Length: 279
Image (cartoon, rainbow, N blue to C red; front, side, top):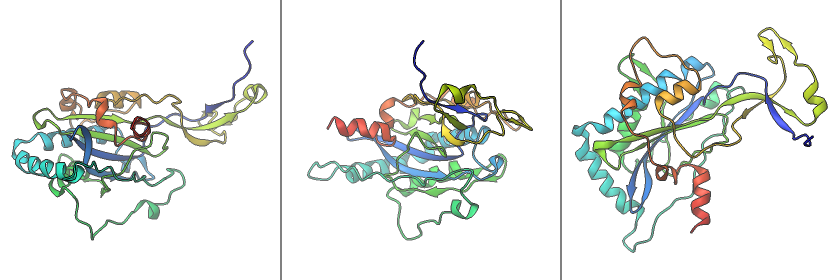
């Protein structure tokens, strides 16, 4: 018999990310670099957060906005500026120090802590692209629903062991073929099982069924977190979200290709570590 290996046991149903960070990237000087970043912090009540169908609808809006030819002249102009921003005249590459997202906890963070003030003094590096992303994330014209959104620094990074954050990334390298992808991992309340004796103890019986009354802490349950993105349909299926009667938000994303792995390099911390080790 193989020796017992301690592990974390889920004592609640898994759920998807509660808050989201949205990156728009483009290939500039050989790398996919951020040109706009926006966050939307989830509410304590799931129905007030971008989860499930609202996130799929959000992806559809963003892809639609950046695919619209009437926006392309301004976007191309700012992408040309981005080349000078990230690569200096002497050829030196600019890679800023990573900026971490707030370490929120969906069960402990208060509404006041969720309300982060806007930076009202700084000017965004690429304001038109930023405005397109803000509109796509923050306003749903179909339902009239608005979401709390906040511009973030271009150096913001996503950490896949966060119990709060998921990521949406949009690649606008080719505006006639915009790509997107969703990254998010299952979060559950879990209890550490250090021994076979503890494992054999019966579940506590709660009102909602066995295990619901068990004490535990929120954890990302995916020990292996693959370096790939999901489509809107995959995301809806993975976390068992219901479709909306209002419209089909996954129809357009279903025909939109997913981003290449290279697009994740500078925004996902596990890729940053690999990139740094190969320099």
